[in-house]
Structure formats: C-alpha cells, structure tokens
Image 1 (cartoon, rainbow, N blue to C red):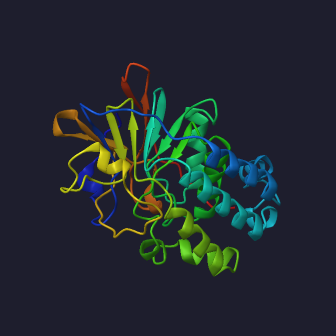
Image 2 (spheres, rainbow, N blue to C red):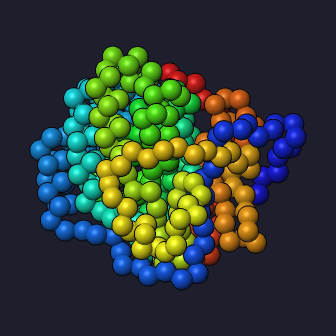
Image 3 (cartoon, rainbow, N blue to C red):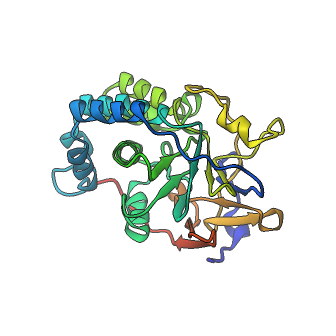
Length: 298
C-alpha cells in the first residue's frame, strides 16, 4: 500500500469514488448469453473489423498513428451500434466467477489504461470488470472508451464495463467529452452515439455471489440483489458524486467495503496513486498499486 500525505494534497470535493461492496448472501446465476449476443457479434463482423481497430488503438502514439488519422468517424459510429447490442444482450446485474481484476476510474488517461493492461494482462488472458468513469477530465477519452468497447464486443463473456456517473450526458457534456468529440472529429452526432451506448451499460457486477461491484454507493431503497437484476435499460439516471482515492484504494466498514481509483496523477494535478484489485478463485483480494507517471497527448 502506498502512503500519501493527505493534508498536503487534500480531497477535492465533488469527485467520484468507486465502490466494491462485499455481500454475504446472494445467488449467482451467471451472465445471460444466447441468440441476441451471437446476432450482435455477427453484426459486428459485418460492420467493423474489430481486430484492426484494436490494433490501431494500441498503436496510438506511434508516428502518424493518432486516433483521428487511423480510425474514421463512421467506424466509431459502427462500434457504438454494435456495443449497444452486446451490452443489451447481457443482464443488468453482471454475474461472474473469479479470477477477475477490478479497475476503477480511468478518466481519459489512455497511457495509464494501457499501463493497467501491461501490468495486469491484456484480454482475453485475464478477466476484467471496469467500474465506470472512462471519459472526461483526461485528454484521450475517445481512445479509452473505444478500446474498452472493442474489448467488450470481442470478449463479451470475460470483459465487463459498468457505468459511472461520467457516462451520463449531463456530466460529460460539461467536463470534457463533448468538447473532445467536437474538436477531434468535429462531430456532435458521435458524442450523441456514445450517450446511447452509455445508457445501455449495466450498473452493477457480482463476483461469485459475494462481491458486489458498482461505481457509487447503494441506494437506501435497495433491499435485495434481485432489484439490481430488474433495472431496465437503456436508462439515463441522475448523478450523485463523491471523492477520489489518493492511495488508489481505501477500506471502510470493517473491511467489508473498498473503494478503487485507477487514474493516477488525476487531471495532472493530484498526487494520487492508482489501484487494481485482483480476486482469485478463493476470493482472496490483493491490490496492484501504480504510482503516478506524467503522460502527454502526442
């Protein structure tokens, strides 16, 4: 665990925390698969070369390989279309088995996202749940969300992306994603297409019936796990907000709850670390902590 001087850095009010809550009793049924998912994957193959897009995204930063030079707007639009189908083909509560890695906020810090994969392993060799807040604040929200959607579409049964408060139009309209879509692709319709994808994202994941994952805290109106399964999508919810975690993760409630934040050196201003939580087959949880590195958009 990396120790930070909290008083020197301070906690900015209004930033979001990632929450993973331990549930003692729950029933695991597994993620839904079937005809809808196969149809979406067939549609994907007809609309977009997902392997080629992943290759282009992983090469961003190389000379002449910026996103807007190598990936056309229509390809991103097609990715959004297929992503909606894949996300809607699965349950509102994503139920998975360990081992799995759990990651928090990314916020457009693409180099740090790739760093997470370098340390944790790239899909499909490792299972992942990301807990939201992929866009805004950082300079490469488009690269982040496109790569995550590509992996979701290609490896739908072992790569999962939950929804955060910044996957909400009223938030990312103001905090950078709208401006990035408008500036880099000169396209408002692209931003609108992403909002449709965000509205289909699930809110919660359940690991082995015991570890409940979500972006924010539980509603006081929530009485059972079944209520999470019954959430109707697509949906555009209101936005609450919390804080960042300066050490990458922090425990609460007698270690029954842990928050995770995966965007180091947040916004280029805060001296915070990033963390990724690893859950093994025995539900033993360990953490990989990354110190901040300063990256610039090429």
